[in-house]
Image (cartoon, rainbow, N blue to C red; front, top):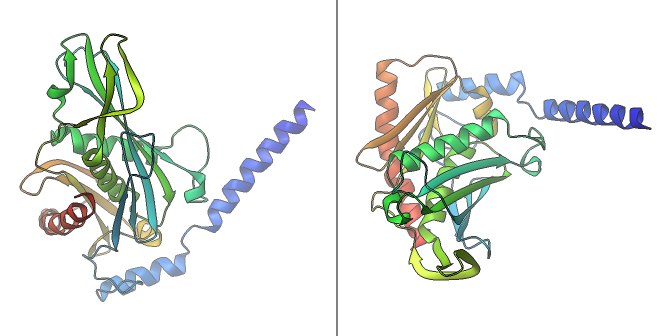
Length: 287
């Protein structure tokens, strides 16, 4: 009987891999995408530097300190913020803690499977963590309860609901929006524990400069933003820029193909232009 279950598990795993392969972008589609971009066109009618429609819905979880649903076109993520009380890190005894995790759920794409986090989801979690941490968006020093002993910890959890490309930027928008609407839970000093389900009127202390991520992709000689799933498959290299409008706080290049100095300048200029447009969307939904 044990052998039967092992064989069944292997067969199921192989079947999942075959199903995922069916959703890979075909060579014909890849070639058409490249040719369209040479003419400055995209399948959905957008310009290379144009995002799809962005919507943000706050308050999707009644148990989280702050939560939002973010949609960019058909791509959709849920982001929740939870808080806990614990010991500070040894190198920052007077500062709160931050942890960002991302989970790509199988319901969002046949390419994702249950199990330990894969590279793509780990990368998204780390990039969003870096964008928030390096921009100093959360004023962690104000989350200290007792120096060296007790601080607030902020946990940001990202879940993919539908993957049609650019989960990274959707997650970045969601993380910032969830932090903006989050409230600090009630803490019982006497019992030294959080009273879950009860919140104070205080928000998480945040700076005025809002960090956002813009990921730019290079396909052939074209630079595009907010790729669909098919465009993301064709992407040869990408650059994720985390900025707060006036300054860049983080930058990470992905994939192996190189970028010229001119292309880097083009991407930086474009990210600055797009920041303003995304910020206006964010401001509209979380006011």
